[in-house]
Image (cartoon, rainbow, N blue to C red; front, side):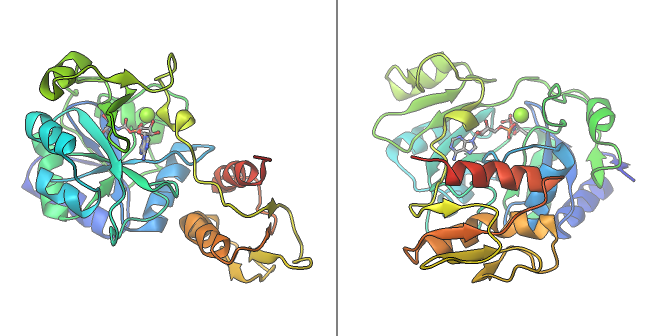
Amino acid sequence: MTDILQPNPQGIACAAAILADGGLVALPTETVYGLAADARNGEAVARIYEAKGRPSFNPLIVHLAQAEDAQRYGIWSDNAEILATAFWPGPLTLVLPLASNHGLSSLVTAGLDSVALRVPAHPTSRAILQAFDGPVAAPSANPSGRITATTAAHVLAGLEGRIDAVVDDGPCAVGLESTIVGLTQNTPILLRAGGLPVEAIEAALGLQIDVADGAEIIAPGQMTSHYAPAAQVRLNAQNAQDGEVLLGFGQITGDLNLSPSGDLTQAAANLFDYLHALDALGKPIAIAPIPDHGLGRAINDRLRRAAAPR
Ligand code: TXA
Ligand code: MG
């Protein structure tokens, strides 16, 4: 059952309570409706991918109530200060180097050492973020491969019964996702064109900004150099062979086990942390088979990339 909440104090309190409980709530922002979960709760974030039916793990944008919160999660710079001052709250997302002790689930960043942050301007999303008082991961609230949702009716058409609630506050004013600027290198780069014109960003920075890797700026997730272990990876392993460490699942125990009970949501929540932990041992990694349905498809997509020759 998906509840329809109103953008009044009760609806806002209810949305914040669902987030605190590890649930999923679709909320309006000025760009598009977002499918929100507590960004510190790996299983809640895993449920986002489950509800969207996303066959891969793309990093997600972390939404914050105010610009001051950003420095807890991302490493600040002069350009970050300029852009945050000029455009937050608003339809701009900044990708920053990940701060230490950020407390975010590694599923939010897909194991990368950068994080996408945004302070939305919509009064309802701001009120929910304030009431929840924590970082909120939210991709657009549409099933994978379907059109972005800009009304609560769009959200329900795609996700009814798969999420706890939607806050209905009418159509989104911008109707286009946020513009994403990468600030992880010396010069800012445009990772996705969106609701904030690039010209406005260039005027604030006083420089032209480069477009990431030429033509394709539609799906920055594809261009992101995804986290891959340094170690060699072998899939569908029933046991460890000489010198390997084993990442288990279900009855295949291993040095670490993604989910002893065979729960794919738990496995997704543990995936990047466990890969990092085993990678740190400096030995080849064998990985138990993961069922290829539901979230298992996204897990297997990521594992195939990790095992691909580099
Ligand atoms: O307007 C928006 O941005 C909406 C609302 C809900 O805020 N959100 C949205 O999220 O469009 P989503 O998940 O549909 O798109 C987020 C994009 C993805 O293409 C992802 O690859 C990119 O942001 N992204 C997130 N973290 C990143 C990172 N660390 N480095 C590069 N790209 C990143
Ligand atoms: Mg999207």
